[in-house]
Image (cartoon, rainbow, N blue to C red):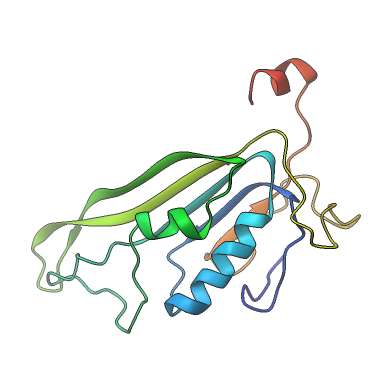
Length: 164
C-alpha cells in the first residue's frame, strides 16, 4: 500500500509498528505527519522515527533547507503521551564517506517509543481500526521507503501478557 503521508490520515491505534525514516519535509509539515503516525500506533506497538541529525553538515551531502533536519529530543514533546513509554531518544553514529571520499562519522536522530497496552481514546471518530486495515505484513512500505506501518496478528495470550 502506497500513500501520500501528508494527505493520508491513518486510523488511530491501527498498527503494531509504525516507522518513519528520513522524511524530508519542512518542520511544520513533518510535525503534523509525525503526530498523526504516533496516533496510529496500537496498544503494545512501537513508533520508530529516524532522520538526519542537524550538526552533521561536515562535507557530507545532506538535505538542505529550513527545518529539514531534526534532533530526537525535538520529538519528545511532539509525540509525547502519558500512555507511551520512551525506549530510545539519541543521536546514533555511523560511518560514511564525504563527497571527496574521506571516511567520516555522521549521526542519525533516533526516537523509539512503545505504546502502553491500554490506550486512552484520542476522541477521533476513527479510534477503531477500519475493517480494511492490514491484518498481516503485506510489504515493507507505505510511501516509497519513507514510512511503513503494519498490523501483525495477535500473539498468544501468554506472549501478550509477557509484553510482546
